[in-house]
Image (cartoon, rainbow, N blue to C red):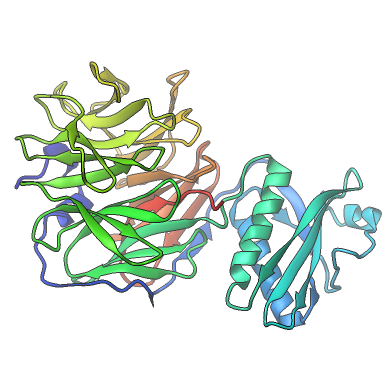
Length: 432
């Protein structure tokens, strides 16, 4: 099998390597990603997260998660709350908090129940308007304390920005350490990483189902690329595409019932659509060029894809009902890896310029394009489910790391592991 000439970057070259053995380890934890914020929004919201009432150690651990989430987002400025704990029932001295520079304040408590569970209660206040913005209570436990913190941070984020928070979401990515590949799943902050699949053969192109319960990906364990669908709750997986030649680049339809895949069973790389169980295979269109990297639009009306049908790799789209393909990108001679924002307004992709491969974003209404990064080996973009950030893989010092940048280019993060290449990121859907 040959590699398409315009997709022969390092991660896809690795995807053609042969290997030896496979093991499925759904509950094995590995090194955590660390997150470094390298940029921030222009107008950050000053907020104080008071120490919650209750057992000091656990309450402090909870508030640490909330503060860390909000600070890493680049949209909030943390105001020192002092050492005094405040519960959701404490009287609020708005003048004092305003004097400290806070526009918003969160206070709460962590109460233990008799069955080993705890209840995290909190309330959010608008200091400027001197009013409550609401609150919530979440049942939790010591092992699930971080999850409760993420939910609180999501509530605060949405109330103050008007956008859903994504701190409770998960990300998937592949770590290569020596000859070992691991498909890992972690919280959006890089913590609680666990391996869904470990192999001595490459794993590429993970894609989340819209409900967050399944991952589609390509594994080379059979000495060729085969598409699997992996149920994350049970650890069971199913081969959904194992035709002659290459089976690659799975992408979920918005309803989670179908997958677009790239097959070479009839000759060149062409896009097919099949049901999530592998049945009902149909060819989306016929092309004399290489068509690859399909991505559904949020409304399910189009599939965007990369093709060299015009002589150079560009991004096109075709109606899922059939018809002629329409070219989308025109700036530059090399544009690949289309990814649509959840609202369908933006298209992220990788473009090649004088500095190498960089992440760009296009407003599909105005066709205005902006290059968001100054790195040289970007690949595999993936939007956060609220559309605010774009996660992608890049290379620093010869080692693969993950980075994230806001859709306006102002907020930047870097996620890395002490040892090993990190590649192939995919940001999961909102938690319902």
